[in-house]
Length: 101
Image (tube, rainbow, N blue to C red):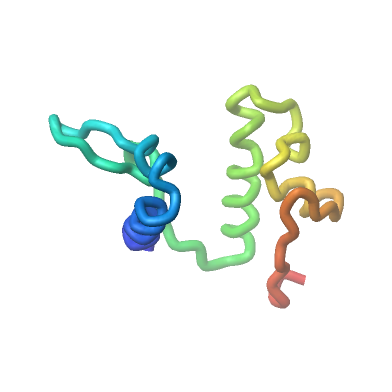
């Protein structure tokens, strides 16, 4: 899914935002490539339980704290932590699945 999305996003950027597309240019093994995702391995996995979802969200919410960008997850503007902890929907509102409630 990630590869397909990346290819589609790059195709859209090339057609609609050529400056941004050009900014994604990098070199990989001596050849020029356009990279939508950051280089490096990820830790993709399937999440099957509510507890696994909660743990994954907690890990993601704490990334800005580990990076030294904020002291609390809900302080980071682009995190959903504020929504989950305080009910705030700014700057991005979330759809809460019915099974979550």
